[in-house]
Image (cartoon, rainbow, N blue to C red):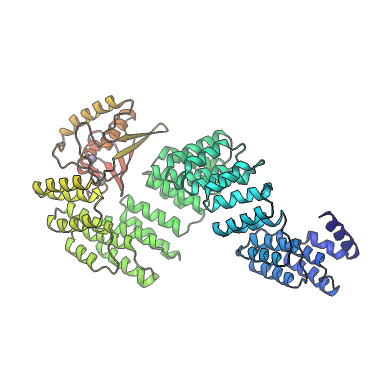
Amino acid sequence: MNSSSSVARTLSSKNPKLLFLETCSNLIQLKLIHAYMIRASLIHDVFAASRLLTFFTKLEEPNSNSLCYAQRIFSQIQNPNLFIYNSMIRIYSTSNNPQHSLQFFNKLQHQNLIPDNLTFPFLVKSCTQFASLETGRQIHCQIIRFGFDPDIYVQNSLVHMYATCGDMGTASRIFCLISQLDAVSWTSMIAGFSKCGNVESARRMFDRMPERNIVTWSTMIIGYARKGYFEKAVDLFRIMQSDNVMANETVMATVISSCAHLGVLEQGERAHDYVMRNNLTVNMILGTSLVDMYSRCGNIHKAIRVFKELPERDVLSWTTAITGLAMHGYAERSLKYFSHMVRMGLTPRDITFTAVLSACSRGGLVERGFELFESMRKDYGIDPRLEHYGCMVDLLGRAGKLDEAERFILEMPIKPSSPIWGALLGACRIHKNAVIGERVGKILMQLEPGHSGYYVLLSNIYARADRWDDVMDLREVMKEKGVKKLPGYSLIEMDGSVHRFIVGDRSHPEIEKIEAMWEEIVEKIRDVGYEGNTSDVLFDIDEEEKETALRRHSEKLAIAFGLMRTGPRTTIRIVKNLRVCEDCHTATKLVSKMFDREMIVRDRNRFHHFRGGTCSCMDYW
Ligand code: ZN
Ligand code: ZN
């Protein structure tokens, strides 16, 4: 290098225009210098040509124009040296065609040139770019062959490559050998572990890392959220704040959508507050996540307010607002938003249609639903997918058109999935149609013999038709097949912490008080007609979770706890993982009347707003 830079000086002193190369900042300037070099016959000088290429290695992401130009310069060099090959490998390593780096590596070997320590990090980077573990391993062999494996740049690049390609075993082995670990290596390990779903190892790495930067924090937080560990993602954000690390927009969008999944309004509000206090840019992703969070945490009015204040709105943000309105039972308004969006010139996407179709279904708007369903293909060229067909079955089912719904399924051009049959089975339960219900239930049991929800639905249907023998038989079949149950749970947020009630679990420190409170509640709502279903029928709709005094449905405990701990007229918000059962639904309606409380329950499918003895779902869910 030293000898070549002295050559550069001699060459540049003879040709002062070459000095411009060092400060050249765009392709036009470069072309001028190149033209000069051709005129002065300098272009045949390997060193001068290599200075031209250096310009391209500094580009962060060379476009096809630049790549073409670099390629042309290269092809005019008669005997390229290693420096030139290294430059080409490096140029392609950040391009859209990282594979080309390998071609230059092969060529240099054909020229009997020996690669050096600068050749490999970029070659490995190329393999990382196109995520080819196989090629990466071959390059690793070459590294060992040429004796560059102890080089720390090479090692760090290998860790990054193996971690990105998902070979965490090899990545860890090399990681342990490195004497000077750079931040990229640590972060690659954390990213690699979380990408393959091993968030525990990712967290161990994260805790061991000497100095964490914003990239590391966001990798870990995003890793948790991807794996569905939303509580951990939110917790880590709290630790990040106490470490005085400033969050960026990406982290906040992840934290806010984690709050949305959890249904924790207070923490979501705090995250929103953080965004405003720190003047973060409410970009489209962050803005949409805020709308989604308020909507899914049960505050649709705030969601719409935030939506209206967004500096810009794309199809996704509109769709989020439309979905929110539909989920909360505002069918007409949801459709109005849809028309507004179309008038603004935005093209609805398939998920937008899922939202409006479910609005129609919830609002009982059969005709409008069919119009939209037709318009999907006709006006927008979108082929309906299973979820759209599901919405249509739901639409017909809710409206009591069970025969039509069954025919609709049988005439579908794609194979109906079990959720589609499930939607019809649900409708049979509501409309007490045991004949179609039985037919559909049998199809479902064949399609998904291990799914307890369908057995329970059918068993509910039999019970309502007083067919107790069939109920018993079905119970036997479930036992025989060992159908797994998913325990029901409910969450309620109180003073910043989340309380989780799981059916049959009495580990809450105040459980005795809470149970006593529920008994008091029952006394009070009995006066207005609550019977407290004690028959065998009482299951959570999705799963077989029979209710007895000890295995009381979790939302009842959450309601009791909410009434105990909040002041009069405070809205109580509960998130339940399964669909609410009829008994809990009736009880909650009566509680909202007798205690004059608004209660918002998010179940697996929708929101129920209980107020003054009625529910926004109009008893259809
Ligand atoms: Zn229940
Ligand atoms: Zn309801």
